[in-house]
Length: 423
Ligand code: GDP
Ligand code: IMO
Ligand code: MG
Image (cartoon, rainbow, N blue to C red; front, side, top):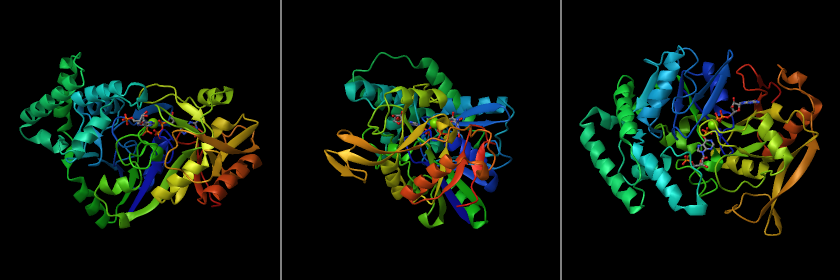
């Protein structure tokens, strides 16, 4: 019996997809537990690149079972496009992809509501992905949602009632100029398409599998700083991205959780609006963006770039109970003379080393500057080849974060992954 959880500790896009793919051979099942097509998880292997949105990143490794849990929100049209794309590239999903009947459906009108709420926020926009995530979770919590299981019985009637309610809300928001005829047709095709997959009570399935001695890897989406409770509210997503989300999003007892893998970049990025204490507005930030190809996998938006923030990371490690860290994109810093890490904040003139209630204003990072390693890491295959300055950077982070860095990623490819043996 074993459930490990893998999640992002920053503002998303840490490289979760790549690591899930690398770790999948060690598990029987990979399961998504929250989020939806706001996620964009990139995998590269054998010269191919894939971006997954709703389908778990274990789908490329053998005949593992991949589960979309009850905590996920699913858009049938986008799901169909994504699944068809994978099948076209020769990956058979049949029998391997199970979808919880309790997962909520993102309707076309949820996406309109997402846009309408954003427009109404004026200059305080969240900068959402526009996928209807917030309105769908809102309907779920206010007991107005449509679930995957609903497609099996008298769906048209239920859909029409929900649509009418949304249209009323859109009128109240003065958001009336839209035509979703074509989108709706595609969406309904997606609903039919979904019926060929196993629609299951995934809470029963995961617990049965555990009893049979199978192991499960839970794949987080977004990141801790986007968690609806603990992130940089209100500039967050609408789900619990933290480890506890794996329990509610799959129906797992907390005593089933083993390792909690926290994924970090060697620096930090954010897409969308909201505070980002270590953001760089200078040439260094632009250079990180350029070398790291920091553009959103879903929206293509420029990612904001900055140095690693250890104050925020300590907080993220705490609320998730992280047992091991995995550091991604180390190679992006290869050419820098020095690298910096934020070890404290100056908050209203006072130096603090904890993550405060509000990071929206008055936060200034306090940095430690270290020697860069100035060496290409991308071809390195074992820890013994790490340059000394890189070893020092790792040791510094481990000391500050009081958590071992178990895996270091030195490039986007599956093969460019180094498991450390000295931790
Ligand atoms: P996710 O949402 O956490 O799965 O991350 P994304 O896929 O949105 O963004 C991570 C990006 O970094 C993708 O383009 C990956 O291919 C790429 N990537 C992952 N690990 C590494 C690495 O170690 N080095 C470099 N240079 N790129 C990486
Ligand atoms: P992955 O899983 C990075 C951000 C959006 C916006 C905020 C709310 O690829 O790491 P939403 O559409 O969820 O209501 O938007 O959250 N956001 C992400 N940023 N990576 C993601 O996913 C994200 N999913 C949402 O940019 O600021
Ligand atoms: Mg992403």
